[in-house]
Image (spheres, rainbow, N blue to C red):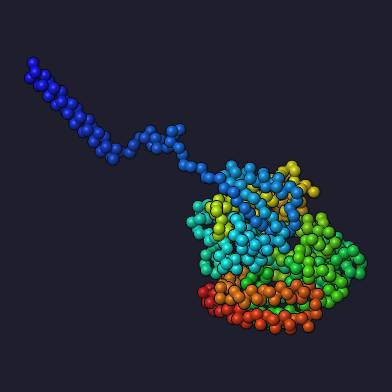
Length: 520
């Protein structure tokens, strides 16, 4: 009986062994079949996240800070609009942003102070040759390099809207990109801004004004007949309207040269100032005659004066299509007309851009916000115009009507993002944006397009030169001093500050640039 039990147990073990071998063979056969035949659709769906399998983690919450310049305080509803913006972008990119609007005269000191103190901010407004000056701040290590990979990963739609032919303007002296352009007018033309009521009252033929000197009889008429009006309003941020149509150059361009010179030779800084001697004498005569406000050399922001509505003639350095509407708001609600006194030059897309603080804690999220500001029409018009029904009323798909005294009016569409997403305002032509694109395409493209000066070897001299320019520039440009006495002193101080070394370095880089472009 004991042997029988042992035999039965042996048979049972053998049977279990055979079953396990057959199962293994079946599994192997299944594996081979899976390699040869694609799995059915049901198998693929099992790879998707389920209620038990968590999806990829959402973006963590981020708090951003955005610094930008404005002509004047946007109004008491700034925080209200900021809150609405945060509700909108929280759902889009799980971020909020603190908007920090600063007047033109506040912007540069505040930006410098925050950088020096290491204060946290993420996005700032910048330009080539003006506030937040692109190359000098790059040289200081203030801005974060924006690689193609970063841009494509975080703001591909915004990048797709920028014509490739304009993109080279974004390259810094080291060949890298540190900012993202605000796509808008990319050409500049210096103009007088003249209140229409005075054009009509005194029958001014604006077509006859081709140079700055041509406005003089009109200024005299205003002085003689309008005692409560400033004929020509100037300030520290609105002077320097010398133009010469024989010279290729415009505000924002790094160099200028004679229009008919095949060698593109640069005049030295001293020669350029000497060529302006007659202009300085003219402005001096206007100042003494009372055509220019007496506080012009010390007044920091011209908009503080224009807002009163009694500046008959001002200066505009861009003259973009439809820009008269913004000027109307800054001129006390008076209609204005642009009167060009120079050619229109393509100055590139780097005249207005956004940059990322190199020490930003959320650079990718900052780029996502910029992507929205440049592509999302709802967000863009919210930051530009405020809340519909409270700060403006929508007329139709093209136009809005701002509500006067509503509490929010930054008047800075060109500060926030792609301006071709903006609603039009009363008085702007329906084809304003088409005309802007046409202006960009048809403006004179100077040989200097794409050229920027690497200031690394001349930083000390440039700092000294800028100090001298700050000391003398506004006084000369507004006519507050006698140029025959002050101009020679100014030029001697420029020489002592190293202007000749700077000119030599710029000329050297300019020569290399011309050769690289096959122009020399």
